[in-house]
Amino acid sequence: MSRGRVLALDPGERRVGVAVSDPLGITAQPHDVLNATDPGLLGRIERLAADLGVTRIVVGLPVGLSGVEGPAAVAARSFGAGVGEATGLPVEFYDERFTTVSAERVLVAAGLSGRRRRAVRDRVAAAVLLQAYLDGGR
Image (cartoon, rainbow, N blue to C red):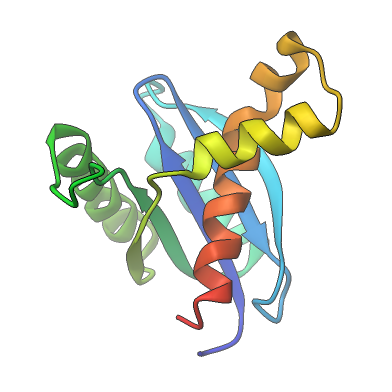
């Protein structure tokens, strides 16, 4: 696995969860939530990637339980292609089937209220996605 900071993006219809790894690419931390409908979204991601000094980007790929890629996966691949073009960085896709469920469990276990969970769920889901990617030795 090549070392360096990795940016994870967990795209949804309304929000994009963002997480970033440490400089060695070992641990993931939740970072931000971006508005998925913002016309300047790709520019914001480009600046974020440059500011954080990331070397590659991972985009969550919502694959169905059967392993079939539906419309959401097609949209994620299109989004990832746009991110790669905007940043000039390599973009990889990673199965994010259970990231939101895992994030919700972590937040419930931490005792966060429903309102507070909603506020951080997307960035925590991105961190769960990124940690799974990093642990997978990619």
